Length: 358
Image 1 (tube, one colour):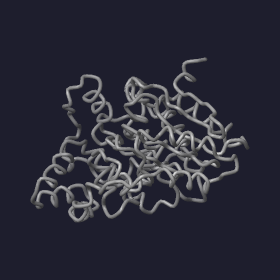
Image 2 (cartoon, rainbow, N blue to C red; image 1 turned 30 degrees about the vertical axis):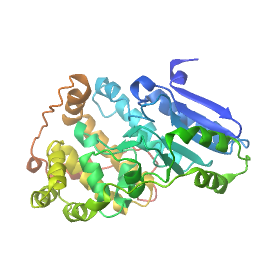
Image 3 (cartoon, rainbow, N blue to C red; image 1 turned 90 degrees about the vertical axis):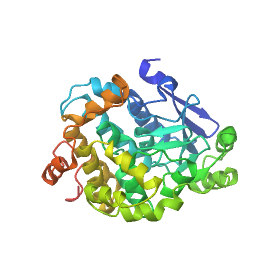
């Protein structure tokens, strides 16, 4: 068995096909091999009449997936036709494929689920969270933008909660993940074994209705969302289409929540914040998940030859000094014209052009 296959375990348990991410020491961070392996597995499983459902889980007890393997992206050539772009292209195609999967796809978002981990789980037909779930899009903190289809999901959260999540990078628990539309069902972690057995016992032709009934039978009530008391403030402050206006609104608000949110934004890459907010607004009008992914890919092309993405990774995981030096370091220095140019879709696409749409 080659190293790529060792990172991903594909197995059958009754009528259930299991995809088990197998890099527990790295919290199952996605490599290009894992992405390709999942794609190949889906090709076989979608065509198998004996498979009732597909279940995605992560090995170890730390989380489903901490995101993409950003160390390998840091070390890759910093060009628009290099390994990083190939990884993102294949990853985004996989995210869209999971969303369109012909078999009921169930993702267990247990433990840490960040970045690329959201891409392979939050687009699933059925998404399960536990009391250990910690779900986040921290990309603006490493000079990147929420991607993997996040700019399709975030604008569809209630009010401005999605904009808040994408710009601050804050971690969500189970109840907040369900509130924002990133998950569907709460199941205690101790009962995940019951889920596997129940799904494995389904008839092969159970379909989505059978899987939905199985999950409803196992799901438990989730507690109140911690963001609910702050939604009105978030809606007031994040309704603007310019990051500068959001920051000004937060500065005018009293209280600890507004102050903490302001501090979150001020620590992020100005370039990433402006790109992320524009992508969020464009995502509102996207007709399909693929449209949002295509614009995210355009943003990645701009960032892969820039400064902040690599500086953010350096500060977070290379030197670990947690003190990135952004360039530019002021929002005013990131022009609207640059943002416009960064989001131009080029001939290097993720998906074929659809009748003039992005």
